Structure formats: structure tokens, C-alpha cells
Amino acid sequence: MTANKVRGPVIHVQGLTKSYKELQVLRGVDFDVARGSIFALLGSNGAGKTTAVRILSTLLKADAGTARVNGFDVATQAADVRKSISLTGQFAAVDEILSGRENLVLVARLRHLKDPGKVADDLLGRFSLTDAGARKVATYSGGMRRRLDIAMSLIGNPPVIFLDEPTTGLDPQARIEVWQAVRELAAQGTTVLLTTQYLDEAEQLADRIAILHEGRIIVNGTLTELKQLLPPAKVEYVEKQPTLEDVFLTLVGDNGKNGNGRNVGTNA
Image (cartoon, rainbow, N blue to C red; front, side):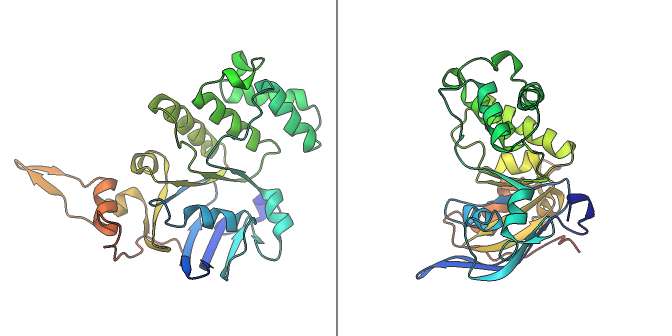
């Protein structure tokens, strides 16, 4: 089954649960991700974001529930799921001894692609790394390493990519560089599931945002739909729309224990 033949959401998650002994990490998670969109799974540390991604990428088995990626069941068709995805973790997985181009060529050869050099050069150009391609990765800035990491994950043209907190530890300029790379992925048809704890990142990038709190999705919708959950504040007769931060803190609470959310704008 190819990406073009998959109908409906590219990622479908229903009733996903996961516990570690007495600790319930996921407690009945449901969401869908449309083809070619950027879906942000937003939550505080410990909310269960990485656990959800590990299950979807077949690195971890759920206790209950179902999940399909690119039309394949993550539990019974794990090999097909792996062929359809790429996963970029919280820290760049690049070899600092090699140059940027050598990193890309190595991965292309491991995936048995024809003309690894051309694959590497195309990706260096796509991620604005051509001038730095011959340099050792040890000399790269944080943003350059992260862009190279994402470029490496795209070798083989996977239709779905998971980005688990891709801008953790990056400075503001590097974050903007990564954001632009993510936007370009979606513009070219790649489906992106992004986990983040940064409210501005979700606000900047996502077509849809789901807030994961204490193992549950407490709200799921577009940025506009989420903002409509709160009444606009009026200051000197000028209407002020609530920000995503206002929505998040109202639903989750400042101490992370006051959320009583609901889904809005759920995909059919």
C-alpha cells in the first residue's frame, strides 16, 4: 500500500493506552492527522508526547488501543510502518567526525539508494547546507546540525515524519531555521507529526494542535478553534484575541492539574 492509495487520515490513533507499572502515561488517546499537514502534539514534560511517538514509530507497544500509520497497523504491520516513516528524536543523531555530505551519503548507501552522492547534494541544497557540505559536522551550529538531521531523515522520501521536540536546546535563530525546514516539508507533501512543549512553535507551525495533558487529549483543533474556547479580552475598547498560551494555561492550569478539556473541530 503506497501513500497515494491511503484514504482518510495518514495517522489514525484510537484509545491508545500505556502504563509503566502504576504510572499511567497514556490514558485513551485519540487523534487523526491529515495527509500533507503539520500536526502538533503539545504538552508539558511528562505529558506522554514521546511515548505516543515511540508507539507510532513501532519502538514501543501500546497496552491497548489501535494506531495506523500510512494505512498500516503499528502492532501487526510494523515493518510496513517503518518503511513509511522517519523519526527525528530530541537530539541530532549526526556523526561529528564526518562532513555533512558524508553523513548523507552514508545513510543513502545504508538504504541502498542509487547515486548516493546526488541524493546528498540534493538534500544539502534543499536545506541550505551546500556551502557547509564539505565541513565536519563538529563545526556546525546547532541549527545547522538539526537541519542536517532532518535532511538525513528524509533520505528515501518517507511520506510521514515524526519530529520529537526538534528545537530543544536551540537558540532563537536556529529554531527559526528549523521551523522553515518543517514548513517546506509540509509544502512538498510530507505529513509531519510534531511534538513540542513550546507554545509559540505549535502556533507558528501547526495546521492542527492537540494538547496532551496527564495522558489524555484535552483539546484538539485548529489554532482559530482553540482561541475561540476563551472569550476575547477587551482593553480600552480594543478586542484582544486570546493566544495559544492563554488557551493552554486555562485548560491545563498553572500547576498542571486543573485541566478539564474537550475536543473541538475533530476530523471526521
